[in-house]
Length: 364
View (spheres, rainbow, N blue to C red):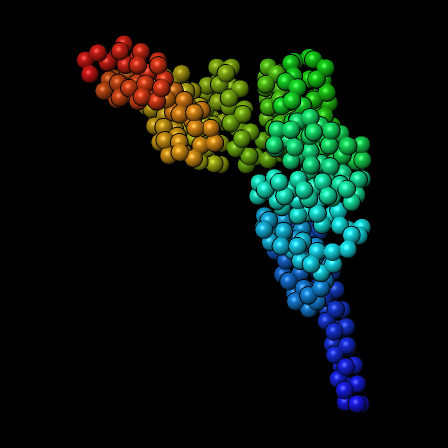
C-alpha cells in the first residue's frame, strides 16, 4: 500500500512539474508571438502542448500563430481540439470562433466562415472584430448592405481601428457609386482620411486613397499619395505602376517609363507594366524597345489566358496588345509581322484587327 501511495505521489508530482514546464514554455511562446517571431512561438507552443495535452490556452495561441503564418487548416484543427477538450461556452468562446472563422474565410470557405462569425457575435455582441469580419465576408460575397450594417456596428464598439474605416470606405465605393463632390464622396473620403490619420505609416492606405482620387479625376492629389506610398514602402511595385499611369496619361512618357521600369525590377511577373511601358516607348518613337515590351506582354497574356479570373477581359487585352505590336511592326517596316498581329487580333474577336489587316495587308 505504501509503495502504491508513493507511486501515486510521484505521478502527481511529475504531472504538476510538466504543467509548470508547459506554462513556462507558454510564456516564452507569448513573448515571441507578441514580437512577431511566429516560428519561435510555434516551437514553444508545440513543446507546451506535448507537456500538457489539455492546455487550452496553448492550443488557442497556436491557432493564432498558425493563422499569422498562413497555416489556416492547422489553425482550424487547433480550434477544433479546444472544443473537443471543453465544449462548455465561456468568455473565450467568441474569440475561438472568430479565429476559426477567419481561417475559413482565408481559404474561401464562406459558408463555414459565416457560421462561425455569426456564432461569435451571438456569444459576444460587443466583439468588434467579429462584426468587422462578418462585414468583410458580406463584402466579399457582394452583400454590401449587410456589410455596411456590420461595419457600422464594429465602429460603434471600437472607433479607433483604421481597418474598420477603410473597409467602410471600400464598401461605399462599391455600393453607392460616388461622384466627385457628392455627399457620398465626402463620406468615403472622411473614412479613408480617418484610417490614414490612425495609421500614418500604412502604405496601402495611401494607395487606396490615391486610387480613389484618381478615379475621381483628382490626379494631383493621387500623385501625392502615390509619392507618399513609395516613400513609406519603396519596394511596393503597385505604387510605381499607379504613378506611372498618371504620368503616361499626362504625356510625361519618359518619367512614366522610369516608374514602369522600377515596378518591373521589383516584380517582373506583372504583365501590365510591359504593356504600359511599350505604349510610352512607342510614343517616344523608341520603336524597338516598344516592340520588345509588347512581345513580352503578349507572351505573358497568352500563358495566363486559361487561368485568368476574367477570361473575356484577358482575351480583349491580348487582342489590343497584338494591335499595338502590329502598328509598331508596321512603323519598323516589318509588314509581315504587322499583318500577322492584326490577323491574330481579329481571330480573338477584335474587329479593328481585321480593319487594319485589310488596310495594310492586301498583298498578304
